[in-house]
Image 1 (cartoon, rainbow, N blue to C red):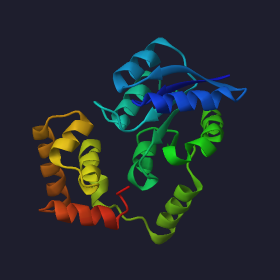
Image 2 (cartoon, rainbow, N blue to C red):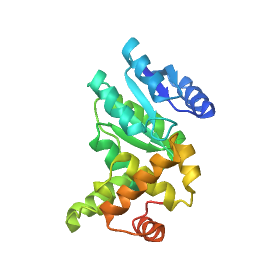
Image 3 (cartoon, rainbow, N blue to C red):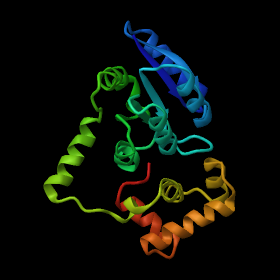
Image 4 (cartoon, rainbow, N blue to C red):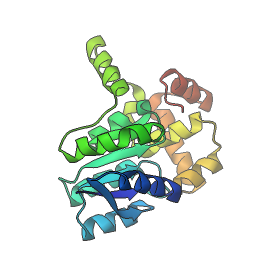
Length: 210
């Protein structure tokens, strides 16, 4: 039996995954958490075969939670479940220790097979991402400026590009507007931009906007 811990701040998502896995014979949701702190506590106290982790939750960013989970239980597979397209976070997640990345839009059709694959010790990426990575290798991989950003800076970039105001970004990230302003200033400096318009154009060009 594959025991799964689902970490997502939306109860309807957790309920949907639980119902989906109940229809299988070899996997069950045996733990639920709505934020990173609760997830880390459950990982310390109980044994799971796999963690399904939402990348965007109030408080700590999902990739930071991922790194902490791997610090507690290095061999515990973690699969990122996200509303964001793979271009935004898949490679970052895999580099941080995730065993797979799946978009919520395709979760119902791919999730069960992906869980079996990851729980069996393998990595999971979609066919689309595999093709994208193969094209990067064949064309000579170029390190883009947004790869230099921290997770919080990168999240700020994506939220600015999606049209959110500073106050809205602060609410999404559960941070103060002042802190978000610092992240914006840092990413502008790192990417050698001066305005939000430049950031938005860059994000659209590199398909970082949903």
